[in-house]
Length: 228
Image (cartoon, rainbow, N blue to C red; front, top):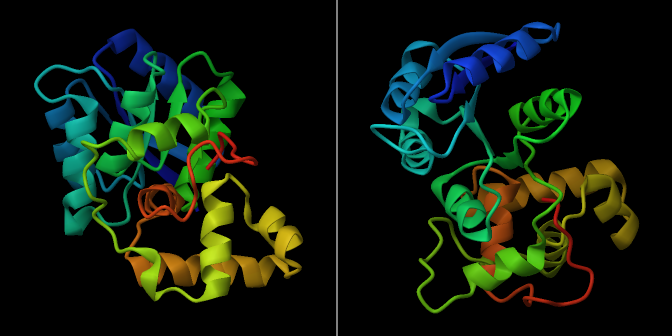
């Protein structure tokens, strides 16, 4: 199935470069381009995009707020947002995740890595740029002024599901979770899907937030990873 991509960036040259890159892939196409955050929200609806590559700093409406509006729109429930920016700071990462982004990358990545990231996020997975670490993300999620997560807490999860959630928060993929708990990869994937369903989470990025905000994973604990 072809991945329908919406490019949102206020720089025409950047959009053109990304459009050429996406067009070079046989499994995706650019269905629209937006120069402002408000255009991105409108085009996500009208162009029937599967994924939005979203810049942070745009006129009219910034990328964080545009992401929040897309994530909150029930008609756009299947649309994923991949934030791609030059501003790789912890605050921006957490704000993007809270707004509903499923991925966060910096613009200095290689072209092939961007295409892989689009495929990963479109498939319902999540990822962060290699630079950030779960310890730094946790520091902001656990700050006194942090907002309560929009999804549910882990109280209603079984002990096994809580174990799986903790490993997701530490950056393990389904295969690694299976190895750590002595499960099959399919069983691990099923656990993750059930956890998302119970918590009402859009993707694994929101599971990370739940794990840290609830105290299930302690900030700075050993084994933390930057991947999601």
